[in-house]
Image (cartoon, rainbow, N blue to C red; front, side, top):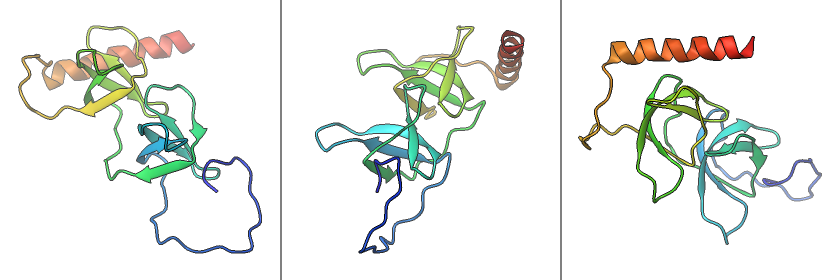
Length: 149
């Protein structure tokens, strides 16, 4: 069953008709009806595990639902924040599992609880032109490579 890390034998098994989960799929997860839903990314199928946004480790959840949201891509421009009271910051996705983002103006990537795609509306923030963004991403990747050597 979802939420367990071991397999078991059951007398009664029925097909749910639900679509199978895919590694990299965006989902919403929670452990109990007492807690709110968290956005996350499926990391493993058996047992079913997900990285909740804002965490650096994956875990099993009792409740996992499809969202239909497209998976993020490395290099994709997004907006991020850690709480509802924080201002949204622009950034670039640097890693998918766990979901990590380089906020504009920072030299390191982080995990954030709230991550959303740029929706194209004008919020008064300026964004780098695609060529500058590409150069910036290359510099960030080179810095990561040097730090990991």
